[in-house]
Length: 244
Ligand SMILES: C[S@@+](CC[C@H](N)C(=O)[O-])C[C@H]1O[C@@H](n2cnc3c(N)ncnc32)[C@H](O)[C@@H]1O
Image 1: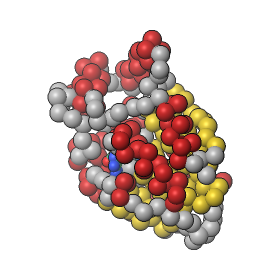
Image 2: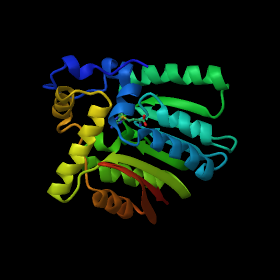
Image 3: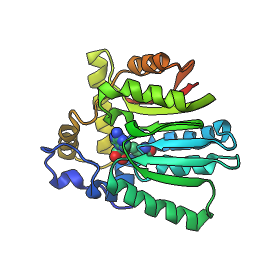
C-alpha cells in the first residue's frame, strides 16, 4: 500500500481534490485518517448479509477505490443481485476498476458490479435493498443533501437499509474542540506530523462540510426513514443505519 505523504509537500492552500495523487495513496489515507474506517467496512459486510435481498440492487455512493463495494460483495448471501458503485472522480474510478479486477481474479466474479463515473445527485435509484454513503455525503453541497437522501429513500424497497458514515460536528463548542483534538492526536499516532494535519485541514475547509448527528437524523426522518440509529461513534466520526 502506498504511503500518504501528500501534505508533506502540498501546503494545503488549494482545495482538496480526489485526483490521481490522492487515488494512489487513498487506502493508506483512509486507514490512518478516519477513526473507525475498518469497523465501518466490517459492518457493511455483515449488514449486506442481513439486508440484501435476491434480485435487488445495492448502491455504493462515492465508492472511491471500492472498499465498501468489496465489503458488500463479500457479505451478500443472495442470488441475482447487482452492486452499482458510483464516483464522480475519474482517478478514483480508474483505480477502482483495477481493484475490482484484482478481486475478480482472487475470488472469481461473484455479485456483478457496475462501476459508474457520475455525480450521485444524477442517479435514478430503484429496486434497492441496501445503499451505502460511506464518508461521502459530507462532500456533497449542503443545499443538495435533502434531495439526495429523498431520492435514495424513494429508490429503496420496503425494509431496505441506508448506511450513512460521516465526520460530524458537536453542538457544544467545548466538546467540538476536544473531539477535534482527540482526532488529531489519533492522526499523530498514525504518523502524520502536526504540519501535515494542519495543511490537510486547511485544504478540506469548505470542501468537507460536516453536520451534527441531529441534523443527519432529522434529514433521514424528513425523507421518510422510519428508524435510524448511530451504530458507531469514534471521536467526531459516526456511522448511522436507517431503515425504510
Ligand atoms: C471519503 S471518499 C469515500 C470513501 C469510500 N466510500 C470508502 O468507503 O472507501 C469520498 C468519495 O466521494 C466522491 N464524491 C464526492 N462527492 C460526490 C458526488 N457528488 N458524486 C459522486 N461522487 C462523489 C469522491 O470523489 C470520493 O471518491
